[in-house]
Image 1 (spheres, rainbow, N blue to C red):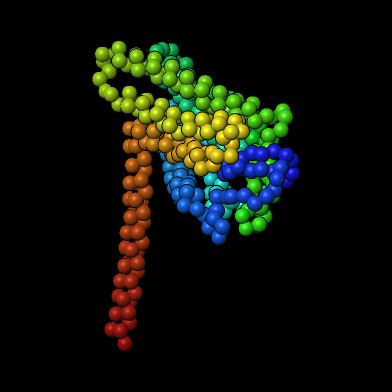
Image 2 (spheres, one colour):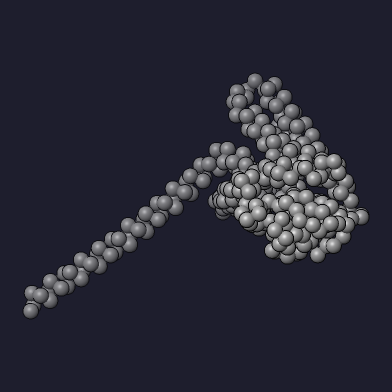
Amino acid sequence: MATGNNSSYDHDYEYIDTATPKPKSNPVGEDGSCRWDCAVLVVVNIVIFVVGVCGNNVVIWIIGLKMKKTVNLTWYLSLAISDFLFCLFLPINIVYMATGDWIFGLSMCKFTSFILFLNMFSSIFLLVIISIDRCISVVFPVWAQNKRTVKKASIVIILAWTVSIALSFPSTIVRDTTIVRDTMQKEEIKCYNNYEPPFSHFAVVFSRFACGFVVPFLIIISCYSVIIWRISSNRVTKSSKPLKVMSALIGAFFICWLPYHIVVLMEINPKYEKSLGIYTKVSVTLGSVNSILNPFLYAFMGEDFKNKFWRSVLRKIENALGEETHTTNRWVSGSSAVEASNAKVSTHM
């Protein structure tokens, strides 16, 4: 556990002053209960966990087992896996948010942070890949039809995940644990960012902002600007749905991640580091919302996926009802046979 001279933020982005281990405020009240703002965030994160796990699990199930592999479905599957992994470990952060005490050890402190940023980078890179792929398909339809293959898409996804892992690795270096005292003089363990050379606070934050937001956002905007221009100039295309979907994708990306990066950039300034508190927690939660939006924006809005989903659900219901009916008929037949046998015995007697 760290005993250095750093002042930074814990996993739940509460200001930590490790240089002076004195009583400090935390996300729980003096009686050990979660404050109202903390309670609201806990409830929201629980909803994100439930909806994210269920929604992304459905996407993985439908795409992985029920649909024929295509390039687009390969993108969606990888995106769903990334979001599913993030949501799967979200309960650990929920417990920490509710209690203010990190009970999971140093290794898990590093790992959960790594998963958070792995999801952030992999999701954003996949959105960029999907944008570029759609742009190429619109601008060069013949070339795309001949050259786009599932194998090539899988190679691109492996490269995207490799880069995401490399960019997420610094989070495992800067994460650390320390012991502090709360307002009741009770010792608590905090999981926080312990920035030391060569991973300085500014370098880590700026690299995440540049690689995880600015550059991807500019690429996405450029791709969809080209797509919108081509669709608008194509008189054959009458439907406005593609434009609405594109606007939703860009809007969700912008709304979910911009507040997080703004708050994290503000952390660099010592003037704001002690006062951000709840704003950082809200921005992290808002970024997590992206993990439950992706299944709806990328999968459930597709007609093929929706039709396959409802057919699979109806088939499951029909099979369940069929099995119940079959079991009931067998039970009724068995009961009738027993009654008939008893009647015969009674007659003979």
